[in-house]
Length: 131
Image (cartoon, rainbow, N blue to C red):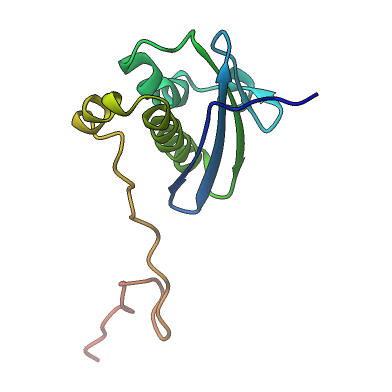
């Protein structure tokens, strides 16, 4: 069985990577062979994932298959949001302006700063003792 994808895109956030494959359908989102509500039980994270779809009113138009790995649930949901937004722009380039206005097209490059040698954390110093 061969599936013809309309668009595919990649989204990253922190350590999470989301690969998205969009097909014509009725709004089903499958993440790592599990349903969206099963993978992200929190309604806030479900809202984050569906933001670009709801903004363009195409939530019931496309089926989305996702490969998601790395990071935690917040990073994964935001990586998925970016990937979906990028895929929607590949489908229809006129949507880019609306998505950019909402800040959904920008890659959030912030990640955890590494721990430095001789310190307890990345920036924290050991407690100073005068005597």
